[in-house]
Image (tube, rainbow, N blue to C red; front, side, top):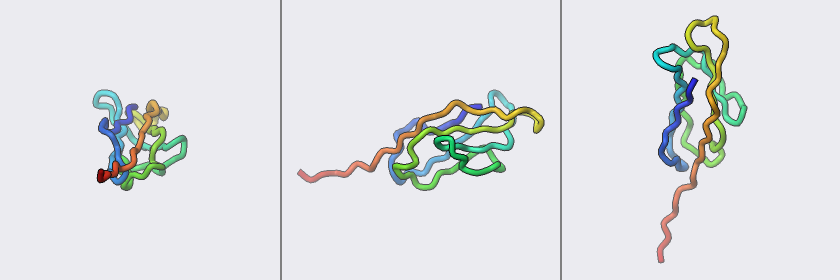
Length: 94
């Protein structure tokens, strides 16, 4: 499994969708998402998780787990992906 996270810099207030994908055309079912080893809920009907508007506490390691192929196949997990949320840059008047 691969957890896809946007490659751009993430700022407070951004909305982000995480995607859990199998290799090739393999279907992925019973997907669950994790943030710093804490289960974010599921199983979800799909393979995507939309995070609420980002806050600094959303930074951390994310991972997904699910079944690839048949419903009888064992659960697999993605490599952890580190997400860093940056504070909004304040413009200063000089």
